[in-house]
Amino acid sequence: MTWPIIVAVAAVLLAPLVGGLLRGLDRKITARLQGRIGPPVVQPFYDFGKLVGKSRVVSSKASMAWAWSYFLLTLTAFTLFFMGQDLLVVFLILAFAGGSLAFGALSARSPYARFGANRELLQILACEPILLLAAVAVYFQTGKFTVCSILEANQPLLPYLPLVFVAVLIVLGIKMRKSPFDIAASEHAHQELVRGVYTEYSGRFLALMELTHWYKIVLLLAFIALFWAQPLWVGVLIALGAYFLELWLDNIAARLRWSWMLGVSWSLGVGFVVVNLVLLSVVV
Amino acid sequence: MGFLARARVKSPWILHYCTGGCNGCDIEILACLTPLYDVERFGILNIGNPKHADILMITGPVNWRSRHVLRNLYEQTPDPKVVIAIGVCAATGGVFHNCYNVLGGVDKVVPVDVYVRGCAARPEAIIDGVVMALQKLEAKKSGGVSYAAGAR
Ligand code: SF4
Image (cartoon, rainbow over all chains, first blue to last red; front, top):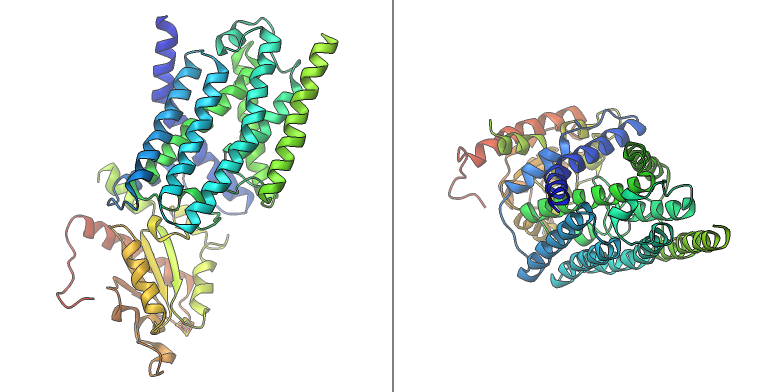
């Protein structure tokens, strides 16, 4: 029982570093794709430090409480994942964390935040079925819902769950707030509804949002890495590949309407997972 | 310089607002973001939300309507912040200086830290202005800058 705890603690400590660097690489690569030089790779850490040093402006106390709940719930999901626990629990907690973000935005009387919150809820609606069904697919393959069971399995998941993998890539795009799915709030230079769900947060609360976002990205990438866990480094490479695929998509795609996002994730995303599950039960 | 102080200088986010000029200066501000000048390499982002901004870039001579908006934006921006008045009309009213509807300069409404001259201000001058503003931002945090009692 001690090993999972050590792994989880190490992951919690290292994730901000990895997440920040990934975001820095993201900005650098995006800039290069646009023919610019781009900020230094450590820029997200500067942004984080700057935000921590700003004065406190609180638009509504409730939304600050929700901000903490967003952070703590994400952290809980993250820790459970790295302790090798149940994927269903991890995804449900993650969904509630997303809900907290939306409720926080709804607690401040700001029209922009309100729109952002509604769209954030729609994003959760788009992602959750895919993630939960992906956990079911993992169960089909390994007989358990846990992360441990994937690590202990003797063959990788990807050859058996290729369509589930594609569906999870759609979720990654939505959770990373990248085009074409950046509808609740967008990352860095893009603007949507001022700043969508983040509009009412400033200073250290925005820094907290950013930190949470880093944890979430690392968590999702770790889940993607699990698709090739024998050996794990192949999975890590696949996850990085998926990350850069999203960056590329972000730069060539326009933003979709929310109805399109739901359409894509429910028809293609859920469809892919279900077809994969059917094939798995028929063929294997 | 500590990490926080360094971070402040390395990550200025800009809010830009036109108080009623001809839009010439606004186009020059946006030109700074293009691949030719690419101010993002200094960590500068053009942000649409005053609550996330560090630097207010104001253009235009300020008229009786836009002064409320300007005041509002200024108050919504968390400290430490700096204000840059861009173009001659933001400094004195410029070509609009004796219009009946014009107050004549951003400093009639909010305290200004840096004036960038030009009609329109060149992108190079704007970037220079931001560099100057960053020094002031640093000085402000360490208590080196204070406004005169009459400053509005
Ligand atoms: S300074 Fe000149 S170019 Fe700039 S907004 Fe005023 S009139 Fe237009």
